[in-house]
Structure formats: C-alpha cells, structure tokens
Length: 289
Image (tube, rainbow, N blue to C red; front, side):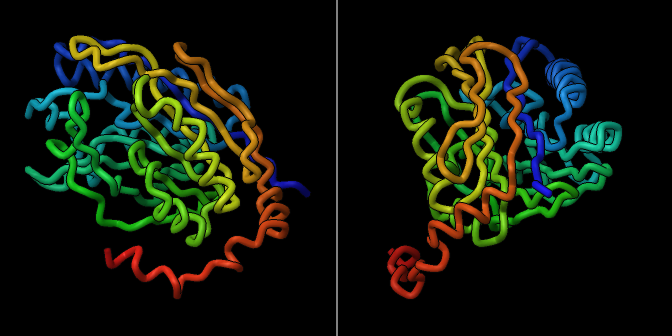
C-alpha cells in the first residue's frame, strides 16, 4: 500500500500594522492562520507547515528591542499550546515556526513540531543567521541554533526543518537526509531581488541530492513601514526527482497542497545511490577551513 500523505504550506501576509501592540499583531496572525489550518483540514491535509516567525511581521527589517516581546518561552508558550489543540482537533502534524525565548537576552529563530495527537515532539533552532544590509538584521535578534539537525518521527512521516537562510547551506540539508528525513520543510521570509532566482534552484537541488521531499514556504506582500521589498510567495513542494508538485501564487494568502508519495524515496534512492557513494573520509577540509 502506497504511503501517500497530503501536505500543506501556509503563505500569508501580515494583517496588522507593525506599529500596533505586540499582542494585537500576534493575535491577528493567529486568527488568520487558524482559519487557514481549518481550511487545510477540510481538504484532507495531514502535515502542515507555517511560515517563518508566523506570529508577526518580518521584524528583522529593523533593529528595535520591542520585538523581543514577541518571543515565547517554549515551556509555557500559548502559541504552541494552541497549535497542539489544532493538531489534535484535525489529527494533523503542525510545524510551528515562532520566536523563542530561552531566557532574557537569549533568543532563537525556532520551529516546534507538534504531532497529530497534539504531542509536542521537539524543536529545531535556525543554525545559519544572516546579517545583510539593508533589511535583514537577524544577528540583532537570534543566536545561532545549538540543537543540530534533528528529525522528528511523526505519525505520518519523518520530517526535518531548515529555516530560510539555512537553505543556502547544503551541509545541513545533507545531515537531515542522513538523519532519516523523508520531508524537509523550509519556512522562510524572503523578498524579491538577489535571492529570488535561487528560490527554485537550491531546494530542488537539496531534494535531488538527498532523495527526499521539500516543502518551501515564503510569505506574501509588502510590510510597512520598512518596505524592504515584496515577499513573493511561490511556496512549493518538490519531490526527490526535483519535480515540482505544486506552486503557490506570488501575491495571495493560500494553502499550497500536494500529495507526497513517500514510496518514491526508496525508488529514487535505489536508482541514484548518492548516500552509498559518499566519501566522508575525503571531506575533512570542509569542517576544518
């Protein structure tokens, strides 16, 4: 019997102006995403991933300490608790990317993974943190991740998470494959410009090189007052052959959905023996330079 899992990606604009209170901004995004999760469930989605730091705008466009208030302690996170309720309600695995507070002064760009029975399975912390002028001041907000490249065995599939800028680094993508990921989700916030032409090159390459599915998410719209560019959407699913299964629009809130036949992973890996033919004993310089 084929292992076909219907999966979804949520791409959405921020409905509340960044000058409003942090709580109003968070609630606006939660209200929007909960409705979209309900819609995905009605369409039969069993695994869904939200966009990078989905509870707010991409605040890294400026450097202001007020955004530290958006961070949540994972030991008592109302957002994770809400997503646990929705996961259990819909028997749906949910990848929940939010701003994490470990303690005052230590913050991470993190994604929690909640299983279809509502159980919190663990988290991934973004490892590669950009500092790009103008508009991407992430080192002001996030410490580099320190949890490696975990893979989470959910009720439907083994999934890994890579966040936004991580996608430019093949080493972690390979580690997720070697750790057993069948699907890798990359929640992002990226604007038109230098990186757009890479959007549909790098992650298909990761899927092919490692023989797994990739779900790539990008938000949509422009966010005032910063206007660092247009978040160009085009969230998509790619299969282990590098073929696009579904692609979202450039400018609309939507749930991008695809049926992933996980049996294809074995078929592709039996053809392309990339894991067998690796030569890790020759790669020492990669981690010593």
